[in-house]
Length: 118
Image 1 (cartoon, one colour):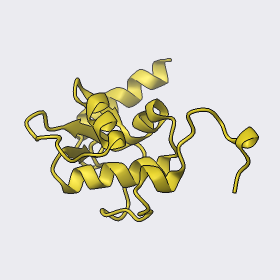
Image 2 (cartoon, one colour):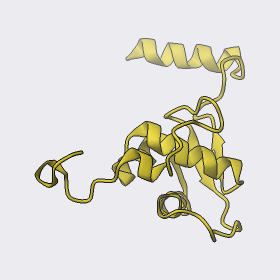
Image 3 (cartoon, one colour):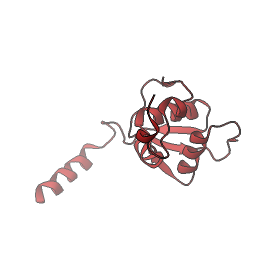
């Protein structure tokens, strides 16, 4: 047990934030995945951390790592909270970039030429 003098003020234990469950419901969730909140989903029954994630994502889009920064929790803990919110339909996760192969060759050549001019 950690002595009171070694505990940081406001520190939340990982098992408390994840309600004792340390596994991802989604499998692998990328740190750069963009989170979009569903404003029409009722928030009744959500934990305090889940409520805070929804508040952070409500006005716009945040990545998993940005949410972790704002909550001051480890990324692995935030991924567990976020994966539950995705499974319940409160959040949607999107890849932060378009996969390779979706750009036209002409656009890529223009970018290459512009970079070479620098």
